[in-house]
Amino acid sequence: MDYTAHYDMFLTEEHEMLRRTVRDFAEKEIAPFIRAWDRSGARHDAGPEERQHIRLVINRMGELGLLGVCLPTKYGGMGMDYLALAVVCEEIERIDSFPRVVMSVHTGLNSLSLFQWGTDDQKRQYLVPQAKGEKLAAYCLTEPNSGTDAVAMLTTARRAGEDYVLNGEKTWISLADIADNFLVFAKTDPDKGVRGISAFIVERNWPGVSSRPLHGKLGVRAGNTGSVVFQDVRVPAANRLGEEGEGFKIAMSALDNGRYTVAAGATGLIQASLEASLSYAQERQTFGMPIAEHQLVKRMISHMVRKLDTSRLLVYRAGWMKNHGRRNTRETTLAKWHATISSFECADDAVQIHGAYGYSDEYPVERYLRNARGAIIYEGTRELQELLQADFALGLRMNKALRAELPAFAPDLWG
Image (cartoon, rainbow, N blue to C red; front, side, top):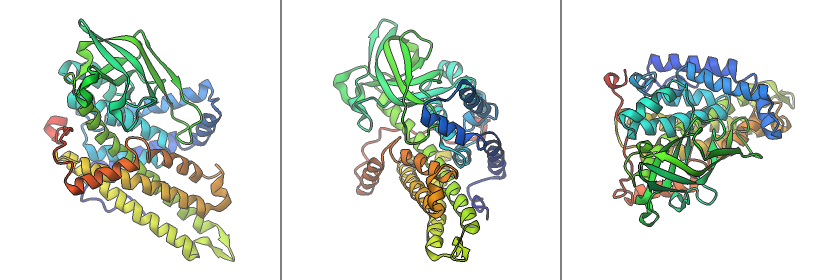
């Protein structure tokens, strides 16, 4: 059964053509190698050939236009909409989480922020090469002592003539060692709280910028994660994104887009868990019959089907709202919360269905389980999502309009 069918109320034939292209790419150019990459990431001994192959995969994503799929053609993108972004993230994470993380960080958090907040000069200089995949970009908000509580950041940017002097450390940064550009958040006025944070576009090759990898991750082992250090980095004032003091607003609007991609990717992981479980349950026999005939196995599979459909519908609703320029923080948050928890539960059930084999990397389901756990934490923990949903229901978020929406999708603007 095709579990991507029957969504034509949201998706067009162009979306389905994109899905087929991305699925073909992921199955041919990622799936055959991902177990080896995951193993080498766990051992911290990925050789030059493996690292180069992973970078080539990212480059290939750029060549296919995936890194700029939802950006206007005038800025180097494919000119497709936000539902197309969801389709790409779904299909890529159906194979593994690491390339979806690339989409989330490079496209969702960084490039869409430049599109939303950047000046014409900033878009020409940074957004165009990022949309084309010629440059890779990362997002630097989390610090060693501040995650969800972003206002507690210690990184500072002091004005010095036509420049800012940037000092601080960011951690748990995806693409830390391979990104060309960083979107960095720092305090320009520590006494103003959320209104004292500003955003800056920083290039890797500037003096004072350095990075180091983080090892020992539970999941997404094939992907690069690390810390980025800024030591007396001189950032031209022209590289400030938005006005001084708008950094927190920019960060939160970026997270709306990042959470959308995470939710879409989690939906793809649910589908992968379901497909693996269906295949194994029909092949594996116990007590003289396929385990698919056992009621408790059927129950786990039925729950996966329910979670797949509800997650995908929540994601596509959020994408439809983005396309129409509607505020969607509540809907995107709900999609991220539901889909990430569901993906972990489905991966856990997939391991159970596989039994002892599910506990080894002979089958991919143990990797699905490890990868799914991280999405419940990053880009907004499940606890934060729960509080946000309660606040929306209670009417407590109505006067907290700190976010600004992306422009509505319009073919004449995107084409």
